[in-house]
Amino acid sequence: MGRGNNRRRSEALSWGVMREGKAIWTINAVPGHSVYGESLRRIQSMECRRWDPTRSKLGAGILRTRNDAARLLPVEGTTVLYLGAGHGTSISHLHDHLCGQDNELKGRLVAVDLAPRCLRELTHMAKSRPGLVPVLGDARKHAAWGVLLPRKVDWLFQDVAQAGQVDIFIGACRRFLNIGGTGLLSLKAASERWTGEGEAALFEKVERQLQSSGFDVEERIELTGYEDNHVLFHVIRTE
Image (cartoon, rainbow, N blue to C red; front, top):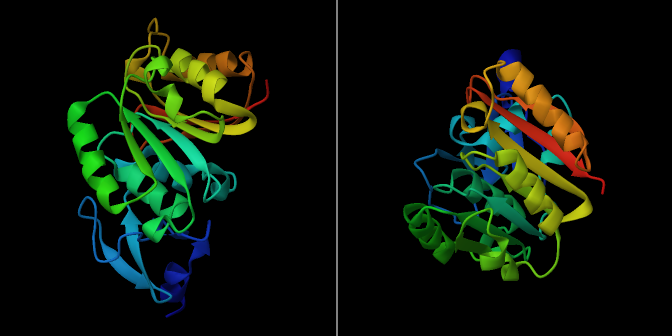
């Protein structure tokens, strides 16, 4: 019985995100509905959705970080920018935390993706999740969609699987992230230009590039086992 109680003990990472061992749950902003077939359950009388870390680099980072996992989440009710929104797995859980049901927290989640199919799925999701703003756009071409963010944000996440990921991230942070803001870069080794020196050397090189570009690297989170060949860089913009 003792072991069972330990497995069920939950840790609140925010008002709407809980961790139980290797499971993460978010309070469902659209009760009765799952987004990608995830399981639903009640925790302390609230309906929650299980956040699958094998389908979400942010979810994997929350489980793998050696630091306070709450620091990877934005402040609820704020405006955030997510580049490379994909099909919306991470986006949906982030929305649960950021906005809540019917956007009672007044959050705003600007989700940019280059794929029309992804945008269709995000647009459908946004119908029941006010505060989610899907954008069809290239993460590198700020002029086309930057008007949606007239003020800088305090949290920016990037997950784009294309060459030049680091340069794209640095450029986006300089344009949209406040000094002192949190940046999260999901880096896929195979998508980055490199000369065959090995993944470890590549990630070391990227860390030095971020440090020399005005960021404090809080942590380099290995995602192997959830997302192989991926690292999540947690940085703070300092200049």
